[in-house]
Structures are given as C-alpha cells and as structure tokens.
Amino acid sequence: MSPRISALLITAAVAVPALIVAQQSTERVDLNVLHRIKVAEFGSGGGGGRGRGGAQGGR
Image (tube, rainbow, N blue to C red; front, side, top):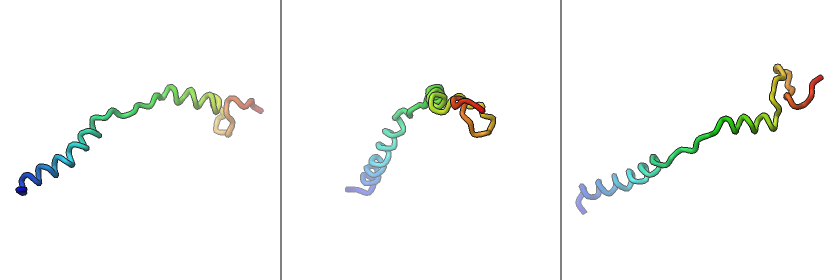
C-alpha cells in the first residue's frame, strides 16, 4: 500500500468515530425537575443558614 493511501485510511479511522460522537445529542438536564426533587426531599429551605430545612418544622 502506498503511504498516501495509508495516511488516508488512518485519517478516516480517526475521523469517523469522532464525527459519530460529535453528532450524538447531549442529554439535557431539566432544572425544574431537579428543583421539584430537591424541594420534595429537603423542604423548601428558608432556614436562613441555620441548617434547618423548610419541611422540618421550626423552633
């Protein structure tokens, strides 16, 4: 095989997987859902930095 054909094959072998990965859509994170989960688990907050969650009743 000539060096030119070898170089083209090596370039194609590297470029094709890179293009496939680049075309895959990235997974989007729904921040509203994350906020709902956080509120459900930890309460609505509002402890003023005193370490209390909103759903734990306050004293």
